[in-house]
Length: 203
Image (cartoon, rainbow, N blue to C red; front, side, top):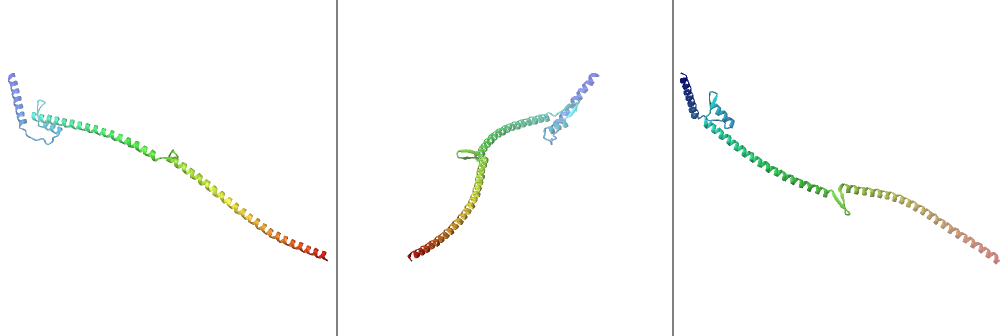
């Protein structure tokens, strides 16, 4: 009796496995989600349970495994391409950094040459040169203003002295005229006295 029960269990199990396998092979339902997660969930939804175990259609399992491998290959290829692109970009960045450094150096040299002025064989910074030039201009302007002021004073003094000289010259001329008149008057008086003297002796 025990053997019969055991045999019946085996028979029903084989029959159930056979039916499940046939159903799994005959199931032609299409999966609408082609992603790995969708394929896995579709495979689980179409599988049958037997004593806690899942009966999975081998073709679906193979398809899932193929999709996994294809996805891994694709991801590895994309990863390799990304690494190559990152390396190319790193090389490009290093090259650009070198160019930027060179251009910064050239710009610094250009700025230095623009800000540098040579005068009398000496190099000056533009700011220093401007300061020196404006200092010289201010000093010369101050000196010119002082000279103009002094020359004005001297011109005024010269005008004053000229006026004084003219006054003295006029006075001297007037004195000269007066002296000449006086001299002529004295000469006439002297001549008159001589004439009188001669007249007095002639008598």
